[in-house]
Length: 88
Image 1: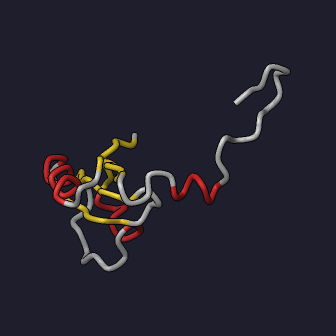
Image 2 (image 1 turned 45 degrees about the vertical axis):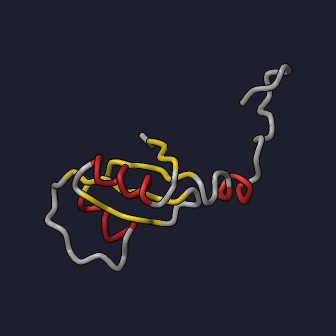
């Protein structure tokens, strides 16, 4: 972000504040490849490579659920009273 002097301004939130932004009320919906499942969900069983999946993550990045449809991920967010936000 540039300020009026054309220099980089400090970010509006610290890294810790940003991590807690939306905590408890927001969840991030992210399209992922099956190859990324083990990194985001280390406890998950092996998944066939080359699949398009959807991950629901808490505002702080904590994994909540991985599923094969966007609708299922959204339903999980609503069932847990979370407001889903898409990540690209």
